[in-house]
Amino acid sequence: MKKLLLLFFVLSSVIKVSACKCVRDPLPQEYLNANVVGVIKIIKVYDENIEQRTYKADVEFEKLYKGTEFKTLTVRGLIGNSHSAACEIDIEPNERYLILLSGAGSNSYTISSCTPKSKLSARSSKDENSELENLKKTFSYLDKNRYKFTGLTFTFCEDGTSDIGQTDLSKIKDFQPKQSFAIYRVKINESSKIDEIVTITGFGSQDKIIEDVIKRKMIVDRPMFSNSSDKKEFLILLFYHKKNSKDQYKNIISNYW
Image (spheres, rainbow, N blue to C red):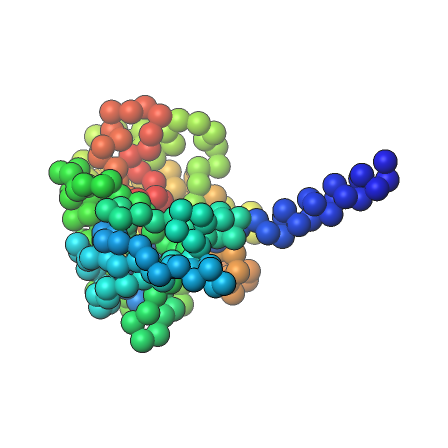
């Protein structure tokens, strides 16, 4: 029995060690950190390296928001046989992704399951084009106003009082935003609740009410693996999701794109 228990704990330890854990930043922080941001289409995959567990993918850029286009990605894993526990990824021809890549030299980039990205539909649609156009405007604002963010980090926030359904932010009446995003600078206390909030750029509708809801309801997530343990001020970017306005269980205002 003792041997069985020992074996169980050993196996549990191995599983915990080998599990892939990705730490993601909010989209605006990933954009600021990235060297290349754009929408790509996978053309073909080839050239497996079994020892290194990598393969190549030729790509085509449909949109470029930042950096310089390239033609080939290195992908972590094996074609059709990638291990998610090792942060490997399967990608296939004709798939499309929004990618935010950083840390490469000589125009060579590697992608894994932890790489900041969002898988898109196989074919673009009117709704997707509208969302990407709004995202382009967000990226443009970040580029033009980078000086406003010096020394600050974008982070996530969550409604500390809402378990399911829409948060109070998404229940604000007569909300007719003039732009699809808003950015706030917040100062938090030891409980990660907001003591002070300043609107850097608002939605252009019900901004004072939104400020009040954020301050009363939101809990700020201190970024992991950064020098933020002693920091009290952070940035929050919220997106407006018009397509969710008719679904009572989805948020029309959230951290997520």
